[in-house]
Length: 370
Ligand SMILES: NC(=O)C1=CN([C@@H]2O[C@H](COP(=O)(O)OP(=O)(O)OC[C@H]3O[C@@H](n4cnc5c(N)ncnc54)[C@H](O)[C@@H]3O)[C@@H](O)[C@H]2O)C=CC1
Ligand SMILES: CC(=O)C(=O)O
Ligand SMILES: [Mg+2]
Image (cartoon, rainbow, N blue to C red):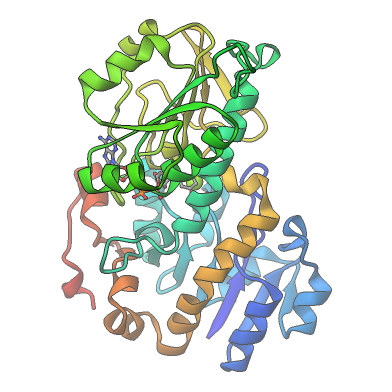
């Protein structure tokens, strides 16, 4: 199989989908890898290393897409990439379809085979290709939030950890999954007073056991969320219903109950966001204010720490890429149930229910296409 690795073109997206070591592995299995010139540079991996591992460096990106049986990316295709997708081509990347009807339509129209990192799912519900990036984004969420709490950045001007004699900031984390727990760890480590909210009691029990003393748990419902708003300094949005549009847990009217300069970090923005007033931002211009409340809504947070993120991501994606390349997509999906959950769109058919539901589109059961 010919595997293509384009350079990411989203704003400040410096990750790359495959390392030189991954090229070596795929080449050993008899596959050919095309890497766009400079694709790994942002993460610290250079053309020469890819070439030495057996890749062909391509200058012409259209040619790379044209020749590749499988495209491996990091972020969802963006508009200039839409016309490059083609019938029968496997595209293995993050898609987050439920956040974009335009992308969903474009991928369907291309008749390509879209296997989404974020919905590959193990039997116990773990999302193995999302976990490492959620770990990065969760840890970053508290770090970024702390920065935007500074007055010159638009925040309230409270130091997250406080000082002796002055109380620390109150941090509310909505969703106690991978993002939530990592955000809470960093915020608590910096001395913040953290409350994690979730709707899963087993998860809250687990968090109560393992988190430090300055982390409380609270059941997530509207009344409990509202009760926190007048005292909270930072809210981190970290909920997920896999593949689906995020629920709006903070509505517009709730902003008026918050203190001026409160910081909202909506990590769930890639699934549409869990605050009603969220809209995607980029690392170039990450924040905006609504009613004096700071919103940070960067949809590719891990892109800002590409060294860590690329290594973390490729650790987990490579084995699946090898399977897809060795067996072809149909056989690989038949053999590996977790990979089967990654299939969202194939040959114009939406086979992942929450995506079809997000846009009222026709849903086709996966058995019909395998
Ligand atoms: N912006 C970015 O750069 C990145 C965003 N993400 C996104 O962050 C989000 C969270 O991801 P993970 O932590 O990996 O998911 P996860 O599945 O590990 O955790 C989600 C948690 O939300 C909880 N939840 C669901 N509904 C809730 C509600 N109404 N109230 C409170 N909790 C609720 C679930 O019980 C679960 O514990 C996803 O949308 C993911 O795509 C992940 C990485 C990077
Ligand atoms: C998960 C995701 O959206 C990211 O890593 O950018
Ligand atoms: Mg994202």
